[in-house]
Image (cartoon, rainbow, N blue to C red; front, side):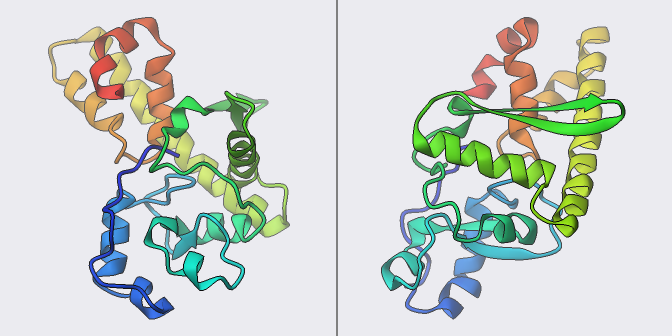
Length: 212
């Protein structure tokens, strides 16, 4: 999850579901969410949903509130459901200040480590949600979906490390521009890659301005 900037109002007023599920509002939502699921950051989802950050429970004010609508994949939408009512709002804070993400491999099994960096309820609830989103544990079907998602993250991070290696080996061959593009918030799984750079003394010094 990364910081987002949403336009203050939708292109057209929203008074029912078809208004936020159809053009031009849906296209605006895709653009504002950087073309990817705002929870897991995958940009290859085959199923897209309009997700209510705060579950509306039938409350039309929340249901049609533009600031409460985000783009999510079917995987994340079904895991979150209405069980998480107080996750971080990425338009009002930078989730990277509250959540740390990293991919680890133990005995050839990939796992995503999620750590809440602060003790507030929103950070803790977001961390719990992301643990299930990336690692499974809810249903057998979700476990398989999570494995596919982790494989996607693993491949993305492996490519990123190759760019870092290339930059360190041949700093004048354009790898710096590639790294800048990879750590932009619009990049898939940007929070993982930005964390890698932030935790490396040399890289964080070189690319500090692109992390802000």
